[in-house]
Amino acid sequence: DCQDATGDGTDGCPVATEHVRIYVDGAVVGSQAIDTAYGSGDFAITVELPRGTHELDIRWEDDGEVVATETRTVTAGKGGGSPDRDRDGDGISDHLDNCPKHHNPDQADMDGDGRGDACDPDIDGDGYSNKKEEAHGTDPRDPDSYPGSG
Image (cartoon, rainbow, N blue to C red):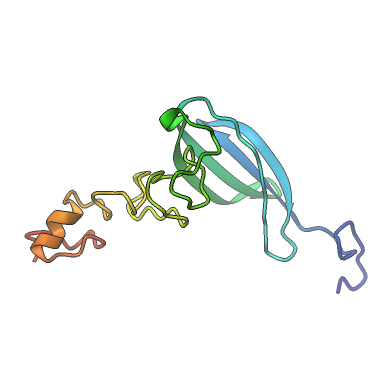
């Protein structure tokens, strides 16, 4: 229901657009206008990465203003396989997967170190391994809970 406004949207209404821009190591490598009229904001931008580790930034912009960001550290060419290879079957290509040998479709990374929780030996980033915390009865998912903390 657009009331008095008409536009180019699939429903005949004006299109509410944002832009998604992809940066690799600080340089723009792709962008796409997306229709956000119904909140979906889906996009697909193919990015070619040279072998190595890179900082991938995704920025959503509305009228030139950044409204959301996401940053990931990705490794391209890891294992020398195809860029579409997905050894753990989680739907994330190995070169973008933060745990390429462990099934983790949500790519959770509690401590933000670039290593997914499914394969991170210190999930909460408190400096104590998960195994050591478990052995001492502390919570490996709570950075305030560690051996000797209380």
